Length: 272
Image 1 (cartoon, rainbow, N blue to C red):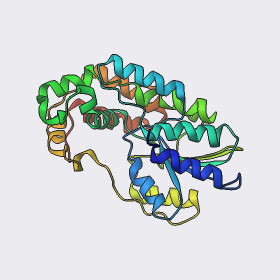
Image 2: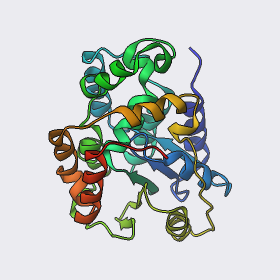
Image 3: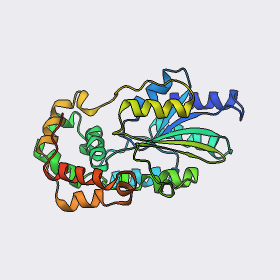
């Protein structure tokens, strides 16, 4: 079997560096704008590890749920293997780490994640072209695990880092730093401006960081169909309330923000 690049990178790092080297880890749920943050850190020459999961139980539950929903379940991808190894080599050994995570409006995040995984969900190559728009819309509600962003911090980060972010009031400025005896953790809001992210990251890492947009679904080859999908989909009040009244949304988004999102989704999504 070919060793995934992530394995080689973390194994080499673990072999060559002692406890005084503090790794930079971007550790977050998918589709929250993390690629731009990873690229910004990498441009400084700092080694940075980009992962979505370090908790084996959470990873297995996610895979089981996707299989039950009819998804194609490929072998565990290299970024998840890297996450499991980081937990073994860094977290479980008590090493310090600087960690960046992000949050995003859960409905927008689910829409983007659904489109990211269309081929696996429908077990069809180029599903954005092969599956009719009305079925794509139905599939979003019937074949996607909508609780993912609402439970990620409880099921993933809390058991791994021992940090409950709900114990830390989130700043209306769109970022928060939490320090423990082992971790420095920066939480960024995906919707924050690039200037806000740059300032927060620069202060957190101690060097100038420049953040640019990256990996936007509307910029990929699926962009045209995604725009049509967003224009056509409609959300029930029950779905909107379930997502925006959840603890996750209430903690990271203020009352006025949630009301603005509620109005937005009540009237339908209008892509830029």
